[in-house]
Length: 227
Image (cartoon, rainbow, N blue to C red; front, side, top):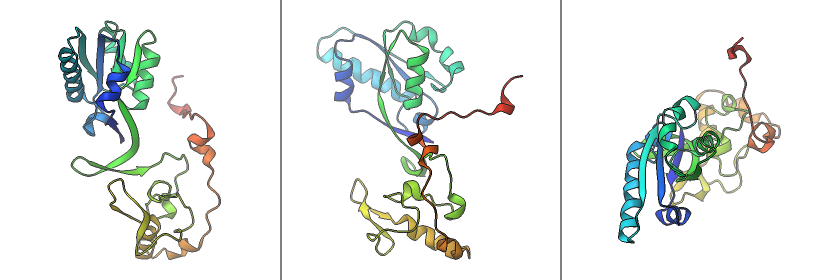
């Protein structure tokens, strides 16, 4: 799933300076699951902004709404009438939803309320781990289902670097927590599967043109297009 974190309130207030009529728009799919931008979070943010304005003696109209998914036109149609009432929309969707809103509602000033950060999986309640870089050329079949693109801090394709020690990466997490070496995990997994011969195969340089490095991507399923 796509995960995101809400921007700091001070940053949002700076974006909204001088704007007194704002619609906070939540998205009830990915960012709702990661407790960042669903209808509940949109309501909370709208309340925070109203409280701040009241404390400063400003008269504002700040309301909230939510779409099932901001990244699909049919769901945006369901909130179109509400969006039309506001010149400024503060979207709490991921970057895809924010851009969809800006394209769909061209007359509105659409602003981002969140920072989209990764494609992640839940480790436990309220904790997500990055697991996919959407590189467009999946090699999980050769690495025991462990992605070196995102789980190796250097995205190495042919084994660990010299900084790997005792199964740990030389890089630490944002809170100084230890990070398992992706290639140590891959090694252990392939050994357990009896596929250690894969470790002797040389992976050629990765074709990054299939990722975002090759420019904006587009996927078309011809068989699914209407005749």
